[in-house]
Amino acid sequence: MILLTGGAGYIGSHICMALLDAGFDIVAVDNLSNSNRASLERIQPICGRRVAFWHADIRNEEAIYEILRSCEVTAVIHLAGLKAVAESNVQPMTYYENNVLGTVRLVSAMKRANVKTLVFSSSATVYGTPTYLPLDEKHPLRPTNPYGRTKLFVEEMLKDLHQSENDWRIAILRYFNPVGAHESGLIGEDPMGIPNNLLPFVAQVAIGKREKLVIWGNDYETPDGTGIRDFIHVVDLASGHLSALSHLKVPGVLTANLGTGSGASVLEVIRTFEAVSGRSIPYVFGERRPGDVAICYADPMLAEATFGWKATRSLTQMCADHWRWQLKNPNGYRGT
Image 1 (cartoon, rainbow, N blue to C red):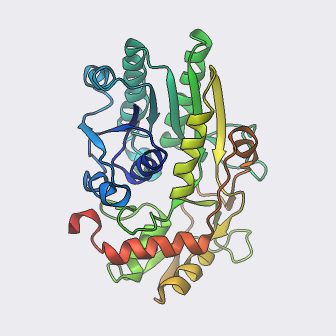
Image 2: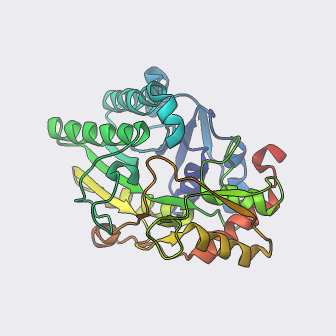
């Protein structure tokens, strides 16, 4: 049995799909603070299997221990946490409590239950401002915001854990920019309030929920002046977790990027989305946001060499799948 913390979230629901399709038994745990249980209810019609769900918070060690024990869990994929960079600057202590303390409680419950296989959802934000590109796993780690620091602190904590108890099997996966949705259009990204990420905002403009997109900065040293990021399809990202989990046969700590190895600018994303949707995306330029960098993309070769994973889906497919989700669910899961 595999336990997914944050299993009802955007990435979590897609990982649930990947694991179920591969024949794993899973249990999803989520406090539903920034997710919706409907995402899990929609999985059954797609793959014909039901997701066991517990409404719990990872900061509640006793609740997590009881789930681990009663469900006979053998491994954990840890996704639960807060994830908005801008919000983390305003509410840093909330981020440390949820992301760092929450992981301490989770690991403590795992130790008590003798569950010592863990895949941790980290982030490319641990790298901070790139000193060279592409970003490989040896790049200096200098996060520029509290969210990124919480991810780095957890990474270091997990390494210390293995150093002190070397029977742990741990994979640390550094995500780049997850986008897209399952090809069925039944599960996808459903941000609460104003989207923090580019593609959900673009989709909401395309469908008429928002008037226009603000592009933060058009004077970067890039071909079209807008920032370049490594966008990865969420289904590819989910398969990366499955590959990493399957690789954890012996004790150790594995750290790997999950990205495509190439970047797309904000304007490229807009043009691609316009092409697949047939809709115009009005936009205006705003001032650069503090902390944003011109270009950021991964070197994903370690993941391919170590556990045979590689992203395969194009930006066109990312946009097409996200648009299908948006069309079918103009109000997200709250429309069901």
